[in-house]
Length: 173
Image 1 (cartoon, rainbow, N blue to C red):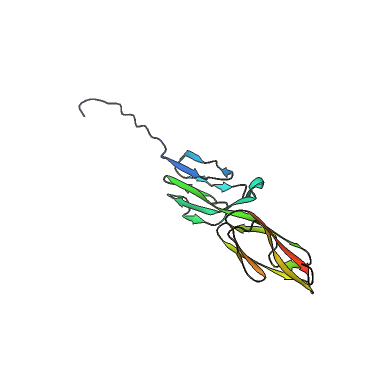
Image 2 (cartoon, rainbow, N blue to C red):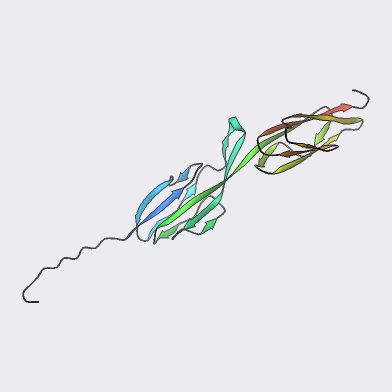
């Protein structure tokens, strides 16, 4: 130093990003990239799971998330809880699809699978139990690609379906 000098130091908070990804539903915060100061407590959540698309008899269900950076690595619910943003982080929401299977009986009897949401890609076996002095005549509805047994039907859940067991009294044809 050969003379007086003025030195100014400028400091800024370290800032990091939180990236939120979700193909479905309502995420909080919504999908996008958010910049926050170092150490800011953040969380992410899905607020409308399951999400139903009634016209398609389809249900989208959030089954958890995967995280990177300072986000929790994974979870199986719809809320990450709070975590401190200490480096760039990402939360990706994971979803699965359910399809509605409606089961009915025409005539006197019951089926062992009630109408309900079923996981896409599974095969549901529905058995019919005709009342005394009744028998199964056949199956109606969306039976394409189904496999028929003596008193059952194996229903591949590739689309929403309505399946009806047709039962008649013995002696009627």
